[in-house]
Length: 180
Image (tube, rainbow, N blue to C red; front, side, top):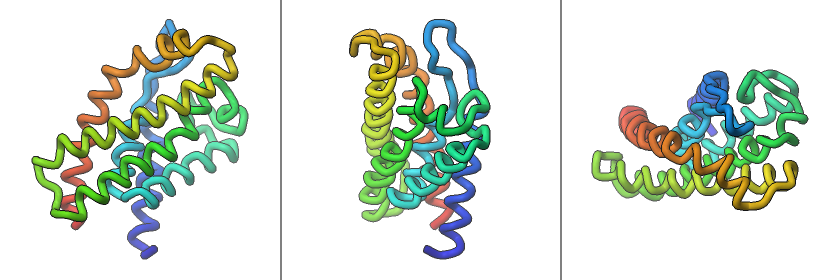
């Protein structure tokens, strides 16, 4: 990696921290609304699979060390082992998946508007990955059924997450284009 890559990984780690601070608690679920999926998808799409995942790994390690970088200003290993911890560690494969598809998309040609839909669809795959990780841990800890977990931790967030990844696909496209 070059110095530029280290700086970009650090920058996206900082963006992830900022997006985790923006929270809206919802009365019907312990999961809060954040901009984290926006940051993760953007990191993967802009940095690629390995560097995007690395920036989220750094974010996760900072939080494990106790700094309050997770949603609702939490940190520590307890946050990772709690009800919403599956989403935190699920961000790593989400960034990798988004980056994996973005690398294949952008390596063929420079990003253009035609690629927005393909990039958006690749981010949907990454979103499914984080939903799966988060739902599995939520079910294991809260001892609820699959249906109950989906109803409280996935379905309410789908419209918001679709909007976030739509924005992420557009932002990623332009950031990637101007970084080239």
